[in-house]
Image (cartoon, rainbow, N blue to C red):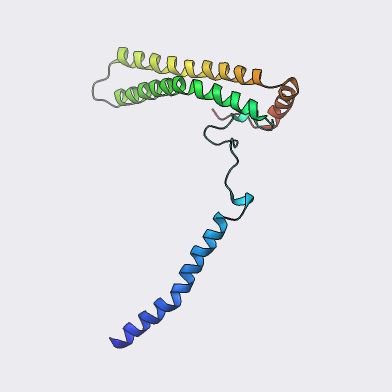
Length: 155
């Protein structure tokens, strides 16, 4: 029993420096300068960042503010329509798996879902036009040249 305690104590003593060195290495990474400072503000692909179709276009600070204002103003409507579509989709899925199926109710749910999805698609097109209006003619040309390089969006 005494031998087991001694081995456990020895293992703990030997493991302690290894554990503390791992934490120190992580701490160095967190304060490692600009490369480790995290994504730049307004990073592409980040929530709240510019949409992907603006990829490759360098925006001025004023343009970034305008893009933010446009996206921020439209967020509540997009969220509302997204929730409506999701709720209708879930209700339709539940109805399809229910013991009693009502075709009229299913059709109404499908219509609700389609209307919300259509509203979302229309709002995305409107938003894209508002954002394009923020760009200079040179930036619009650059954005148009970047478009063919990207793979088509997933369905």
